[in-house]
Length: 459
Image 1: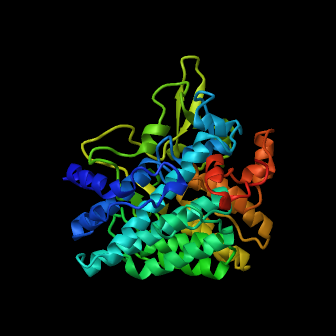
Image 2 (image 1 turned 120 degrees about the vertical axis):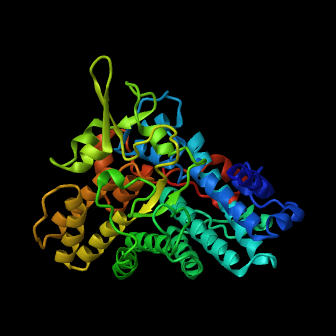
Image 3 (image 1 turned 90 degrees about the horizontal axis):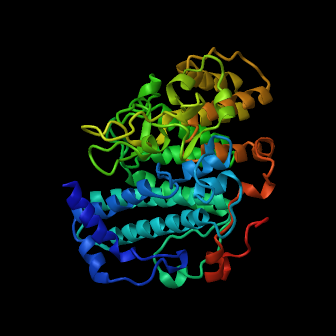
């Protein structure tokens, strides 16, 4: 059945398969194909399934070695590259990236191609009179959620970017950039339209579609970035107070497919595979051939932190040198059935967002409650009350680092959010420069569309 669905997905996405460059996205395609895809509920759902498959395979949300979490983890202070010097991950690890770098271009192009797929689904279901109202609403809601989320990652990584909300070729080939603030506003607008259309909740083990809880999680994240503390509290509360979505009490179960803390997961490509993260990060041999955790990263865990024992693996080389790796995902290969799904959003992030919001509103005791909820599960002692915002901020940054490492670029975005990127990275990598806080816009895109100029500073 899954093979049949994937075949249908290939047909569904054929309307935009050959979009090699961002400015090519939106070329007129056969209306016959679109009419066939959106003629009934199952085919329409299969078209969206193709989008999810693309997200898991490549781009910001992929757990593969092509995904942003590997590249951005090596870019900052989480991962060390042992790959060839010419590989994408090594280019970012050594800070030798530029506007012509392959990974810069593929992150951009992949994301906008995925956005094109998403816009095709949104427009397809909106214009179809053959799809049931329930499926039409759900797929439109999921599409708007995904469109907002991908633009959020693009803005956080590249700065000012286009916000693409149609498949109109004439518009897209010359579209200009929106400021980060404008992108955030459009992300929120999409999420707010999506929220009433989305399923409210899903049971554990089947949270492979965005729900209202996922929309609230991203709205809370944006509110945190924008320092809108009332909104950050409101949206965090909506998730944390939902009985079905609770912090997973056992660290070794957080990344299982039926974890209670998962808000949204990506389904593996077949029923016996697990995750790309397990395959990419777990070291079966040493020295590594791709990436491993930096030694100084591992050394920063507090004494007694159970996350160090549960989520960090190690392997010794024949020369008795120890290498460490992310061990959040325990399954390296296939099993009789999938045990782990790729966790994109989880409740623990909302506790950390809410803690920051409480702190910034001067409600230090409530901030400590949330931080201590995270720390308590990790076996760490309770932090005592303090009215010192600097001390609390330091504790919050440390908890986010220990809790969210190697998860879709959180560390890179956190260092920017807290104004620590230059300070931390200059100490880690002498070649670090302030303009590395944004990636360059791909050179070939600037040549194709002059409205994307100017290039980001420093490139």
